[in-house]
Image 1: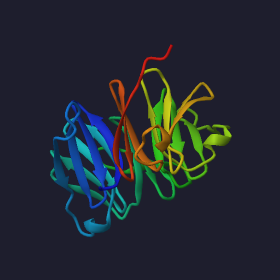
Image 2: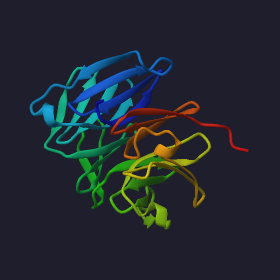
Image 3: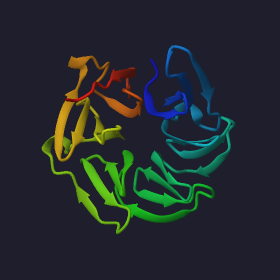
Image 4: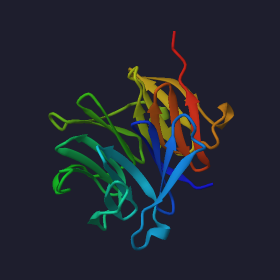
Amino acid sequence: HLSVFSIIKNNNTIIAGTDGCYVFQLNKSSPQNYIRYKLNYYNEVKNRVVSLQAFNNILYAGTDDMLLKVKYYKNNCIIDYLNVKKILLINKDSLLIGTKNNLLLCNPVTLKIIDTLLNERILCLTKIDNQIFVGTLKGLVIKNLNDRAESYLNNPALNARITALEKDSEGTLWIGTYGAGIMAYKNGKLLTCITEENGLTSNICRCITIYGNNIWVGTDKGINKIALLPRP
């Protein structure tokens, strides 16, 4: 099995990034049928595709030492020597890049750095309303996009290495961890925790995406598909 480090939905497909600089395109109805792409550039053998964002016909792929802007899955290297941990497209004018040292605000067309929002190792990002939820080695940081105010989620269970963040249609934040499975969080409370005991192939979760009524979880032992059941 290849380790999966990033996973997103794009139209009717699921796109996953792995070690060895591979990108897999899966059909959501039959994930066993997939197309594999190789992101070819120097040093690609030891690099991982750790973050993905899709916009129109462009795929942004962040690796261990580079940010790639890929059009129709044909490589077009834009930024070199940048240790990317996570990328998040806010709108046509704003792209967030989480690195091993900080959180950068960039122009998605030119990739020019506009501002530094946080000086900390960034592991994952997601946006809910006007807030950015940031996963770090020590827990969750909340960054307000309007006034740049910074706060933390005060819950002992979340004072850990946060590896993935994704919001579902009901406003629940799904949190992936390194060693404790995934958790559901809403309105200041943990709703549930899913681990190997519940069927995950591994408690080391690296990425999450939500497509319809399913959660797709990338772990160090492959991809898991979890059905979201209606809550009473």
